[in-house]
Length: 447
Image 1 (cartoon, rainbow, N blue to C red):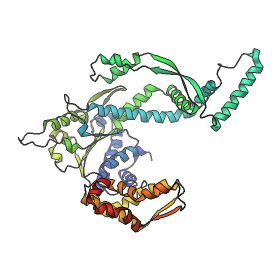
Image 2: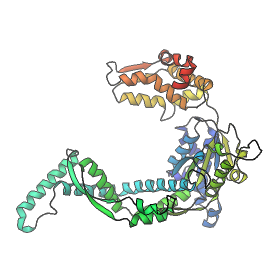
Image 3: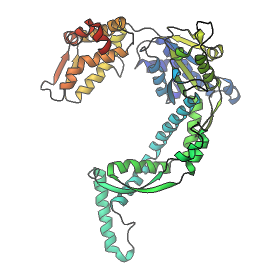
C-alpha cells in the first residue's frame, strides 16, 4: 500500500516503531493524515471546502510532541517545517516575518522533489559526469580527424584506460581544472531597497539579471564529480516541473509544526490587558493558518490546506488564552502524558532507533561487543526519572545525558581496547552516576 493510503491503524503502528506511548496524540495525527487522503477522493468543489483539522499538542518537554509530528511527515514524505512561535513578532517589531514559515516549507519541498527527480535521471547524470571528467583529465577537445587515425586510436585507448581508473576510484585525489559559471552576489542591486524585505519573486528576477562569470578552478576529481553530477542533473531535470510539483505538494501535503505556542498566548498583564506583543504574533499567524496566498520565489501558493500542529507545555497559560480566532483554527486538542520510569525502560530498548541499539552499533564499529544487562537498563531508567523529579523535567532527553555518562569510558577506550567484550550492569551504572546524583550542584550542570 502506498504511504499516502495508510489507514489510521497502520499509521499508529508505524509511529509505534519509534515513539513509546502517547496513544491519543498518535491517533489524532493518524486521523489528520488519513483525512488528507479522504479529501483527495472528493469532488474538486467539495474538496476545496474541506479544511484540515489542525492540532494542539499539550504536554511537557521531552515527551514526544516534535517527534510524533516529524515522524508522521517522514512517513508520508510530506514537506515538514518546525518553527518556534517566539521567533516571530508582529509587523513593525524586530523579528521574523511569519510568511517566512511558508517560504521555508516550499524550499524544503523543492529540495525534496529535486532529490526524487535526481534519482530518476541518476544513471544518465553519472554517464555525463564521467564524460566531463574524462574531458578534464584528457584535455584537447574531441578526437582528431581521420587524417590522424593513429593519434585518434591512442587517445581512445588512453581515454578508456582513464575511464577504468575512474570507475575503480584510483583517481579521486588527482586534481583537474574546470570552468565554473559563478554569479556575482547582487549586493549593490539590493542595497537600493534599503535592506527592506522584498518580494521573493522580484528578488529571484533581480538575481537572474546579474550576469554569470566563467572562472577556472582546480579541484580534486572527487570534488569535481559531485559538482559535475549536480550540474548534469540540473540540465536533465525540468526545473519548472520541480517548482510546480513542490508548490502542489506544499499546498496539499505540507506540515508546519509550531513549537512553544503557549509562549505567545495572550496572558493578562497587571492592568488586566492582554500582552500586545504576544497577541500580535497570534494575529500575524492567523492568516496563513486560515488560508491565504503567499508569494515565494518558486510561485504563489494557497496555505488553506497545509496542516498546522502547534505544541506547548501550557504550564503558565491555557489554550483558551489564545485569541478566539486562532483557537477556532485548532479544533483538535490532545494532552500528552508525562513519562514514567517504565516508559524510560521501553524508550531505551523498544524503538528501532533505541538509545541502547545506537550505542551498541557505535562501539561495534570499533569491533567492540557491548551488552547492557536488564538491571543496567532499569537503573538508567530509574536515575533518569529521579533526575527529572529533582531537577527540571526534560522528559526523555534526560536519557541521552544519562547514556553518554554511562558509556563515556567505553567509547573513549573502544579504539584501543584489548577486551572487545564489554558488559554494562547496574553496578557499573551506579559507579558512573551515583556521585553526580548525590551532588545537586553537579547534577544541575552534568545531567
